[in-house]
Amino acid sequence: MENGAVQNYEFRIGHRDSDSSYYAISSQHPIFGLGFSAIDFSYARMVNEPYTLGNLYSLYGYIDRTLFQVKPLSIGYSFEAGLAYNTDVYDSISSPNKIFSSSPIMIYIGLGLHLKYRLSDHWEIGALAGAKHYSNGKLGIWNKGMNILGR
Image (tube, rainbow, N blue to C red; front, side):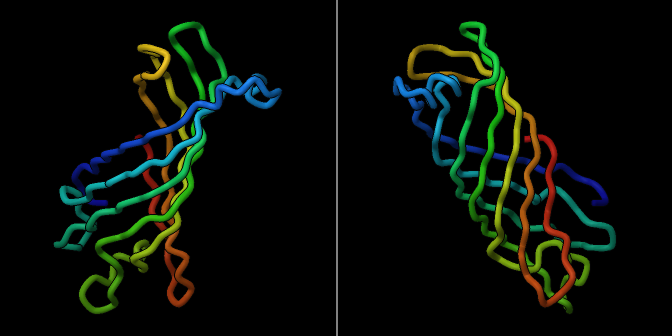
């Protein structure tokens, strides 16, 4: 990257496992859910590349597990996995430097640590810091995939 900022917009909806089973109690009632992520590269530029990197749109499943809780605050981790769509892919003629995005469909994996505040039995807000990896899986050319730190 030469300069610019990358913006991430995310929406997640989940269901807390409130069962009285041994698994639910021992793992402090994890949240299972679906998420949608949009990563905007429109302000970022690569070295010697006049065009943007496009955008990434992800649809994924996740598990969110609490490690430590002092009501109403909790600390935990999140694991996400799914598929992503890349709007701007590698082209050997028009964009030869975009070797890390050579396929429109990518595999997405994310890991994060979170701090949450419970507003009520059904609502909570929080902050998440972590990493995202987008693997294009294309074998025809050498490629790197895309890695994003932050959230």
